[in-house]
Image (cartoon, rainbow, N blue to C red; front, side, top):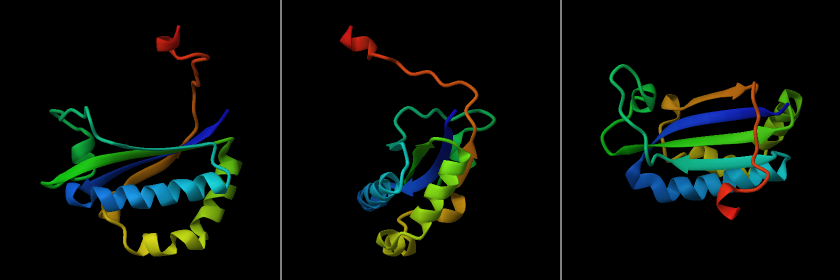
Length: 126
């Protein structure tokens, strides 16, 4: 079974171009060092809840949107090996100094899948 890291980040809409540039660089580093899959996404259909929601989770401020990312690995051991390489990758050093978001409000964690399903062929292609 695989292993997944997930991240939810509040990103100022004014910084979206800088954020996209940063995560393209980060994605290349993750893949270079062995990640199986890397996805970054921006909020599109994220409802505001009555009790809790993703906006409250990151303490979103006026003018911010939410980014969601996940990185997939073979297993936890593989993730730890890749993480070590990525965190010491010199190509990311400058980007880590000038992040276009408030890293204190970033939510992240590693997850062990309990169900994994994958389409053999996209439904639209049938």
